[in-house]
Length: 152
Length: 167
Image (cartoon, rainbow over all chains, first blue to last red; front, side):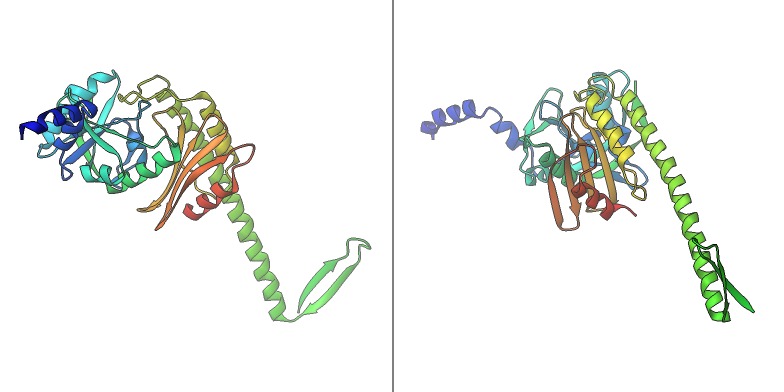
């Protein structure tokens, strides 16, 4: 099988994220931290589509929270999300399966550091198309609110 | 004996018609109904005015919260001024009787409106800075998305969707 080595090497150079992408199982739970109170409706236990709109760099930042306990999920947000902006509040997180993103034809790219960080990419350019995908993701998401919101 | 009086506008003439009890009751009923309608319209206007003010205040508060870049910690742009002004215009132009939206800001700085009835029944708008409104609409199995020009009036295609989701 050594004759395949150059082929794999070339393939890896062409698609550096190939290995990382395959490292996320489609059955894994992915968490999107909710840093705005406008991204969820607590009374209706609903995550709003706005929580899933991509950032200006066309990526949506999520974390792989598969098999993590609540306190560990909290710890990640305190350590890696909170320091990004001084006056931010982290209210909780939206949980989706990785396959929800895959079904929407989005890419799931491991983007460490920070550990367990994933970028959801391959968003359509058109805003209305992004919005319809965000609606689908929000519909499949489950809302998880922290007992006490995390803030600086 | 019940009497129904009619006054002519031109001749200032008064006609008195003797009415049966049934007709008079009917007239009274219409009068009561009209009063109810007037009261409802008044309440509706007052309620709508209050909810419009509430929505405008909410938009202003949101504008403050999102007035700096990276307001969400994920690299969002600060609220776009033109989008904010158009969002205000949109709220002020929303016809009486329709529900006010839930308001937020997208990571690209555009103001977003949302009408949500229940799972699978939702309209999201994004008010862009170039006089366009991007929309995503789900109504059961029906799914639509696109862009509409927003000049002086709210586009009819958008209003139709808001009506469908308003209670």
